[in-house]
Image (cartoon, rainbow, N blue to C red; front, side, top):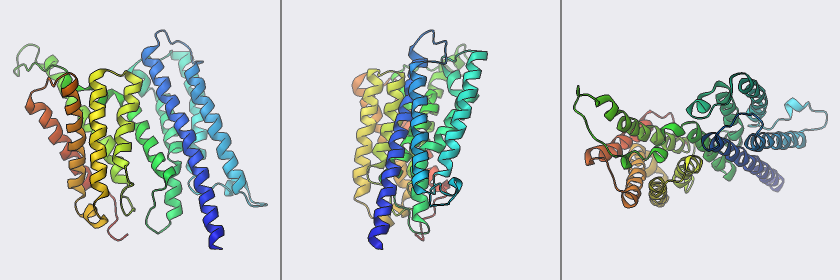
Length: 346
C-alpha cells in the first residue's frame, strides 16, 4: 500500500516536472518576443516567428494538461472533477491566455504594434502575463496541495515553478531592473537644488536607485516565500533567483560588458550566500530572517558593484553606491518583517 502511494506520488511529480519544463518553453518564448520588440525594427504584424514560438508553447502546454487530467480521471467521473489539485489554476490560465491572444491580435490590428515600454504595459500583454502567472505557478500549487497540513516540501517542480515566476516578474519589470540599467556605471554630475538642469541631472540616478529597490524586492520576495510553511529554503535558491532575475533580462536587452560583469559578480555572491545558508540550522534561520535577507541583498549588490568596477569603473560617488547597498538591505529586512510567513509551529 505504501509502495503504491509512493509510486503514485513519484508519477505525479514527474508529470509536474514536464508541466514546468513546458513552462520554460513559454517563458523563453516571452523573452524572445520581447527581444524582437526591442531589436527588430519595423515590426508591424502579429504573425511573427516569436509569436509562433509562444503560441505553440501554449498549445503544447494545453495538450499536456489535458493528458494529465484525462489520466487522472476515474471511470464515470466528470472531467471537471478529474482536474488534479493545483491544476485548476492552470486550466484557468490556459483559457485566459487563449482569450488574451485573440484580444491581442485585435489590439494590434486596430492600434498597431508596440515597440518599447508601451509593449510591457499594454493591457492585452498584461492579461497574457497574468495568464502565464497561473500556468507557471502550477508546480508551487501542486506542492502546496500535496503537503496538506504537513510542512511544505520544495520538490524540483516547485522550485522550477518559483524560478519561472521570478523570471516572469523580471520580464515585466525589465524597465526598472538594476541589472539592465547598471546605474553606477553612468556618470553622475550633481546640480544644486534650484539650479538650471537640476531635474535633468537628478532623474537618471534617482531612477537608478529606485531600480535597486525594485530588483531587491523581486529577489527577496520569492526567497521569503520559500519559507512559507517550509522548514528551510531550498538549497541554492538564492543563486537560482538571482540568475533568472539578472540573466534573462540581460539576454533580452543586450549583453553589454558592464552589465554582464555586474551579473557575474551578483551571481557569484548569491552562490556564497547559498553556501552560508546551507551551513545554518533551521531554528537559526527563523530567528534571524530579517538579518539574513539584509545580508543577502548586501552581498548580491556588492558583488554586482565589484563586477561593474572591474569592467568599467564605478561612476557614482561612494555615498551613492554604498547608499544603494544599504537601502536595498533595509528593504530586504523590511520585507522579512512584513512578510506573512508562519513557520514557528511547523
